[in-house]
Image (cartoon, rainbow, N blue to C red):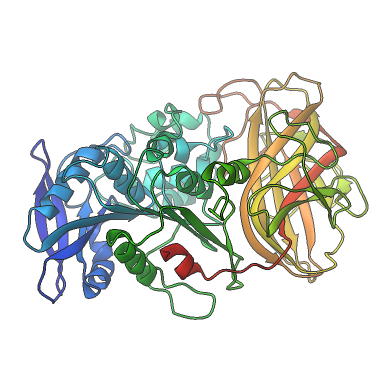
Length: 557
């Protein structure tokens, strides 16, 4: 099996460099198509893997990248038309049996999805199934958190490496930081593109697009099968979950203990590990043969333990509407039902190890219940220091440093700590923090970082969330900070440390506290904060029973 390069002609005549690897057996064959900005040649081993399992495997450089002609404009390119032309090209050959899976990771997942959703399932340019791994769903989704703050470090790294150029330089930002270690501190953020020693005209445009959720909304009308693959440590994990939950056709979710650098390469077949390449092939064959149940199933890994739970929001005998409502329900605070007016009062409550109560009725009701660690209580999270602190953008709390101040002098964050866990806990599902606080500025970011401290004191990140608020100055506000979806086992003796801060830099741009746009602001001001521990809480999804599932059969049924 040898990958040979061809050129697909786009509707406007642009030639798209395309590698094709065919099985040794005679055809026709089903096909898998990967359209990527990261270099088609990087997929040679993957193409060979698909071909060895009976698929005609195609990898293509998107327009304006590597071997393809045209201009590269991320998320404003011709991905829909070019994708449709490529699928039509595949189906026009005798080696194709007409069945096509569109697949990809990150931006390549976006390419697969827009091709699938562009033509309402009609015509030769639409795939029969989609595999979307760690999907980067659009400019708005990748540039900002759903709660507002700008993702500075990741966007600067991606745009420096891939933006406005036909090739890639993965070390571009690191090289620039070596020359200027304070590069990301320069203001305005909109001017960062001018400091990378090459033209980057699209940098300012990425902050203008605020249209979130288009692909999730379009996916509700889809009828073809979807496999959404994400990682607990992936910053886009919640987008992966939203895509899976909202998809109209048979949808499957695999949420593993990974970050964004997820590949389809075959990991060693060992206990607790999944061979993603083999899983993709098995799922694709089931999807193309019409053997998938027309339901929503998903699994979530319990860290690196090798255990998997059914993901909250999976169909489990309830109506899809009920399951979806439970999967999206917002948790109430510790003993303060009704604080969030969109949330009905809890129907059941479970005693929590943190001294609060655990409202029931979210996610997989049989196995997972939100459990509350109340702020300011001896058995919950006691205050260490920083009930009053200053969020100063000139010396922000850093995202790349888990060390915290040892005393309360010039406190830059509020810090709380739990007692050691009396028993191991499994966490699988949505987490959040409830913060009651006061600020003196017109606009404030509230960043909450949860760290697990093992019995030896070793710190490991557990959860993080950040929201932007425009509450009236000097008035108490009740703030909900989503902490994402967790999949983790905590050993007995583990302590939970919670930090509440005003910045998370350089992962996120600094809020200037002046009310100005953080992307264009050139003036910074400190902000005084007060955290009122009464009524605050950390809410974690503790599994009440160990209802483990086998991930591969669950995904492929």
